[in-house]
Amino acid sequence: YLRGKFWANVALEMLKNSRPISATVQVNFTVNAYIMTWFVPMRESSRKLFETYRLGMKVGDFTMSMYALGLSLRYALLEGENLSLISRSLKENLKKMMKYSTVCAKLAVLDLIIVDELRGAESEPFAIFQGQLTNDSDLINDAIASSNANNVECAHFRRFYSAFWRADYIQAEASSQVLLSLPSSKRPKLISIYFYFFRGLLAFRRYRENNSEEQLRIGIETICKLEFWSQYAPSNFENKLFLLNAEQYASL
Image (cartoon, rainbow, N blue to C red):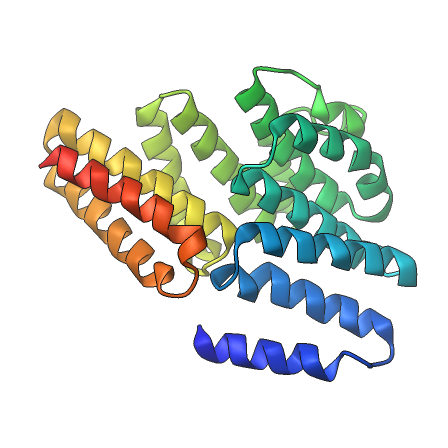
């Protein structure tokens, strides 16, 4: 992690006065989307990605700009930004995403489904696809057909996240197993933080329900992951670690 951060900073320093600027857009996106998440507060990552989006639009790198915008909004959502603001931003930008990157539009729809469920609202996000895709199963099948592992994983994460918040813990556990079976899940990324956090909460709850040693093991393994990550970005991980520790104590 620390070596990755070192070389990321080297790359950013080298690109300060670089040409073409499009290279700066791509490197800024990569650094702030996949590396700095592990070192800086989520809110800062969201802000940096939004700056990357604006720069990308300015220089004509529209595809990368859409990726930066989508991740900026996802970071803001998971960081705890006002749900109404996130909902409005997603709706306002869906058409733009469809124009420049349908992949990003599909991910934004998944985020909007989560926001709608948390708000108890219904904004009909699939209308943007004009009947070609009508539900998340269509999105998963579409992603599989196009070999887009990231969209497949995000769609299954949405199912896991939704089941957890509906208190459908059996479905949440089943969804977590599907996620873990995906090869792409082995690579740490933004949703890994939240997947493992909620999976840990789920495991301790399931342990209290059925006294399964396997669930206790999963919960303790999750705490170990959060302890490791907390070394690098306490502001992103410590609060989650405290909650998992509380769940562990409540289970013993």
